[in-house]
Amino acid sequence: MTPAHVIIPFLVSFLIMTSLALFAWQRRAERTSRIFFIFTLLVLLWLGGFILEILSPTLAGKRFWSDFQFLGICFFPAAWCFLIVSYLGLPVRFRHLGVLLLPLPVATNLLIWTNPFHHLFRIAPRIDTETAAFPILVNDYGPWFYRVHAPFMYLLFFVSLLLLVTAFFSKKGLYRKQILVLLIALLVPLASDIVYTTGHSPIPNFNLSGILVSFSGLLIAFSLKRQKFLDLMPAARSVLVESMEDGWIVLDVRGRFQDLNPVAEKMLGRTAGSLMGRSADEIQASLPGWQQLMSATENCSVETRMVQNKTPGHYDMNLTLMQDSRRRIKGRLILIRDITRRKTAEAEKERLYTELKASLEQTRKLQGLLPICAHCKNIRDDEGYWHQVEAYVTRHSDATFSHGICPDCMKKLYPDYTKSDSKDPGDKERK
Image (cartoon, rainbow, N blue to C red; front, side):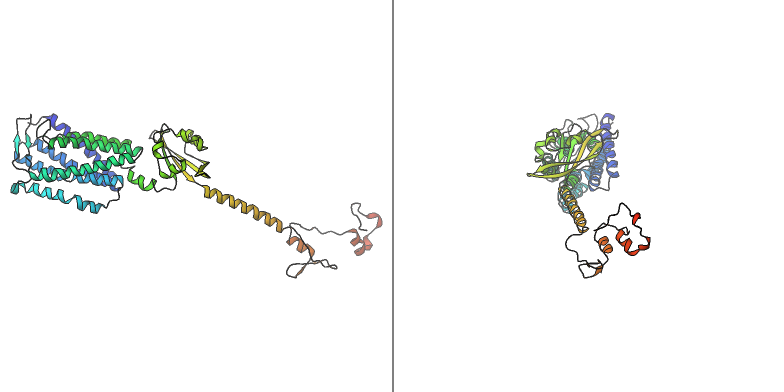
């Protein structure tokens, strides 16, 4: 009889991995989520087969479910490699990677299901009823397991570890935390499996890795919830942030640097390594308006000036507050855009407008020598045409005319209406 306390930990692991699979399926539109979904399915094949192996009372039943487990065991090291490559955004063609990694797991499964004909995978499996309170399958693995399958599986895991460790020291902020979770989630069950394979398991011939998978699953669930694993990944960050023309700075809730891209490093004149974890107040003196961003309680923009490579420039700093579901500030994202060209263009536009306005005003003034008829007083233009003085002056200036008649013309033209005592005292005769 199988004690319940043996089955329950494996059932917990199975349920945790099932929830992770459902979570990944909801995000299947993204490649990394699809790979993670496939990985969780392979782990579920292993866990499900292991639970049924424990429950089976006969040698034939245990052997069948043990063989069934390898449908997942053989492939999930390769799936983990695919996951890490996709997560990190490495420049690898997945078709080529599949050709490299998948043939051996396929061959191993063929040998497992045809083992009675050659005994390359298992030699003489049996049931052990004395070591523990429940019957344990002693697999008695053969040369293919120890010389091909296990070395290949561990090689893939160690390559994944190397990629993650390298990324851990090259990435910053949130991504480093995600990578640390993935490292621990892999190392814990991997160490347990190595102990089992080398024959040093606390329960002889019994692999405890399936129980420890629950711990790894909880770690990944934490990363999915708190660190936005599958939503924010180095792959997306590398492509987007590293190629941005704007400076990109991430601060935590305490105003400490968590991430910044090369453009921001160049703008600030500081390396990411010298700023990570340090207070953002350190750059306040070189960035007028920075304190306004730090004290802001809502998204805002501030224009500022700073010197880069001994050249002053104009910059627009745009703040986006990162908030949780309760609208509590959890960090700040600041984009710094170089608007020097725009400001220069605006200043040039204003200068040209001022000059044009002055030029137009100048053209409206009558200057220089004007050819005017001594008799009729018409004015000749530059093209040789003659115009009445009123028309010419109106066309070439802002002056307007109101027609009247002077006293001399009044006497000359209308003598009958002119009286010597009716002069307007405001009119003056020309002598």
